[in-house]
Image (tube, rainbow, N blue to C red; front, side):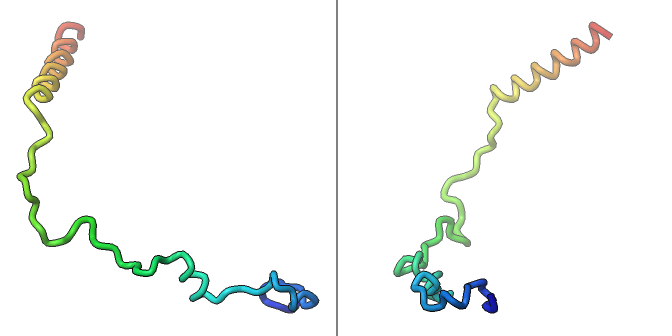
Length: 77
């Protein structure tokens, strides 16, 4: 086993021991045109204004939970 790849010297002529070059290996899975267009182009401004995710219902729910917790602490010390 003198080879750096661990191939037995008696099997050098075996066609199963033929390896592709790096260029051949990495080119086999690539499309003809590997360039993809950007899914989020840079430099553009958003087309619609950004809305805050909190609605009045969510704010009311959070306030009720806080009031219940504070009332529970005040009533049952």
